[in-house]
Image (cartoon, each protein chain N blue to C red):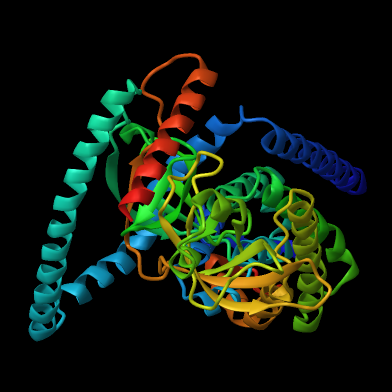
Length: 166
Length: 317
């Protein structure tokens, strides 16, 4: 799958992660903020689908540390979550045909669900349990936004057709 | 051959995964229990500060621009109103000076330690935490301006919150409504209803105002079922715990529920600070100890002073 895909320019992956951070930090009104998709997770899942050999787990870990700083959560919480996201996505890939949107959505549901669950456990364990079902809204908004977001992300790489030799 | 490489790749992936999981675990435990990872957080905050600032700049700029272009008439009206308020405050300030002088004189007579002069610093709110479930904001002042963790921040005459973490040029404030935040408060409206109550009595029946994680909403815990409380009662900080200064308005009671049989009532209150409107806050230095001495001695002396002050105030009222 990944062999006929390449980055559009050097650092395209990092640029896309920075874009996700901008989306994460955009100030929104409170009711909108509840629905904010997990942009960073979506970005990493996207690259795991398209270019698994380019995704670095260490990079995911560092990105997670930055989320911890922005969120004010304990250091390592989102870092752990993102490492699990990358690992799970790469491991689940061979079991799904990821070119089908339906399968992509299943992948996101499983991976993002695990990510949110791990975060919830850690938050509950450290005594800052959100204690509201609103916590799960990003899961659904992420699934809804995915078709559009993956279209936007496709600008960051070039995909050669299998039969296009030159 | 290719399979072998693939296998090795998978194995190194798993190895890296295990390593990073373990590392995250260690970091989390250390960050939760100890404080020596604070420099790491500070560094990351510093590195990401320009990024955060750049993202928030267009939004804060729009806010200021709309303020700039508000209707002239509206502006004039507001100006007039502010002038009136200023006059009122000036008059009040006059009274305050008299009281402060009197206080100073009484302290001298009692041979007490001088009251630490209150210093304050205006800070601008830079951004709101990206985390929907915590109520934290970043301000543009930090340890370079001698801001410290646990410092009290007020907005107008109401309490806003306390400093949670600091970096050289920025600091994070935990608002009163954060889920992890609690402040001890006492009901002052009861004093106007029943002036015969002693302040100690009211203090003993205080409540804990705990953040709900929702905007401008607090929950008052430990309000016993037999306590006199009404909608619209004002709760002020009690000064218990020595973090917050006493007497600052905190919340106004919005709903009271009681299930018969419970020993406590379920009381919700709105904060007097409107967290959606505040753009600037004041960091105050009020409990930094100016003199070093035997702790016990200072404590007992302070208590004595307070008692005297109270009795004088009572007589005055």
